Image 1 (spheres, rainbow over the protein chains, first blue to last red):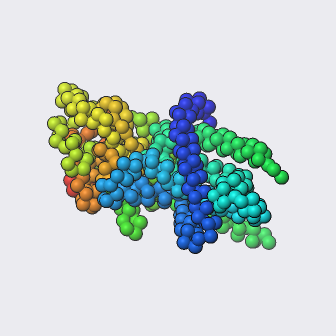
Image 2: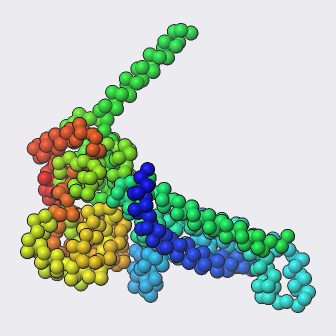
Image 3: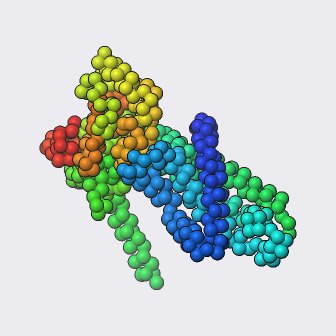
Amino acid sequence: MDLDFMLEHLPRLLKATKLTIQLTLLSLFFGIFVGVFFAALRTSGNKILYYISYYYSYILRGTPLLVQIFIIYFGLGQVEWIRESFLWIILKEPYSCAIIAFTLNTGAYSSEIFRSAFETVNKGLVEAAKGLGLNKINTFFKIKLPIAIRQSLPAYGNEMILMLKGTSLASTVTLLDLTGVAKHIISTTFRPVEVFIVAGSIYLIMTFIIHNFIKFLEKKYNYN
Amino acid sequence: MKNIFKLFLSSIAALMIFFSSAQADSIRIGTEGAYPPWNAKDESGKLIGFEVELANFLCIYMEADCTIVEQDWDGMIPGLIMRKYDAIMAGMSITDERMKTINFSQGYADEVASLAVMKGSSLEGMDTPKAINLSTGGGDVKKALKTLTAALAGKTIGVQTATIHQNFLESGDVGNVKVRTYKTQDEVNLDLAAGRIDAALAAAVAFTDYAEKSGKPVVLVGPTFSGGAFGNGVGVGIRKDDTDLLKRFNKAINTARKNGKISELAIKWFGFDASM
């Protein structure tokens, strides 16, 4: 173990961490909307909407993230009419391809988390809202959603951590995120152990932060 | 009881002798299997290519039992050092940078690098000599690099990661081009064809092979490169402490060069004699 060597490459890895954080936050941000949207479809009571949401989550959760990112990046890049359409402006860039893949993936997992959270909302509360004259939309945003968010915190924290680690696959589509730069350094120094220990520690610190953030929220919104 | 114990001991001894003798003459050779025509895989997943066939002949000359091991390119040298295999034959050019970590046998083939673009690119028809050797330097080379610097300014160029091609582009010899690195040459070719990158840099044969097999209009542009960052031909990578194996490989390569085997295989796989 060579501490000097590790310190020497630390700044470059930290700089790459910025991209990892960016990818994680953006994907999670968009993923929440996708997740809530599909969870709402799932609990809407409409059969067609239910199956759209069901198969979306089934397919996205049933295939590896690596395969998904490859299909979006290399797969769609092979289709000529996509290359000639306006979509290519977005799909040409590895950065946006990665964000799309991660968002769709985390969206599928979050939709399941939110769905089960919605299902735990006490029916009595919904009926009470009805009795008070709240319409469907107001019941959703004022009663169901806040309770569901609190219910989904532990599972969603897990998903955040999984997404953070999932972003390491961005390196497979030429992005120089934390893993990408780590591999790059290894390929010129041929010392995988030291570099991966530093990169792994940085991931660990970020996981630690997410973990405690969720714990803090859980405590804050604990109404039991 | 005593007899059983004796039998047990002697069988262990026999096993140890068996394994140690098998170990002495078995060589594991690491290759990527994703850099056609140097090394690749056929549809059934079997390793094929110039280096796979050459390796088999070298092993015959060394009278050794060889197994060819597959390894991703970016872990090629670490894999050698960690003893996953004893030698590298993966289109790896002999460079000073790699020589700091591992040894190389004498070169067995010349790798000529070239830029490639899709037909109709603005980079076609660059006014440069046919070939430049960065080791010799001189006015021609300087002029060619200047032409390239001007033509490539602001362009995105794809290369396989951890290659001489990446090193060259990052050396500043052709200015500040945007370099995009890929895990395999296949992926470089895909993104070149898709138009995500303006040009790609690799062994010229890697592009001609791809153009031929895919039918995509990939064309070579600019000069072919050798010397300097491009190293001195392709050799067998061997751990620094394995001096005996190095000698054996050098001898076998000599034999294969003299009896014309390298030329024969090069013509078969590259279409021209790339032996050296």
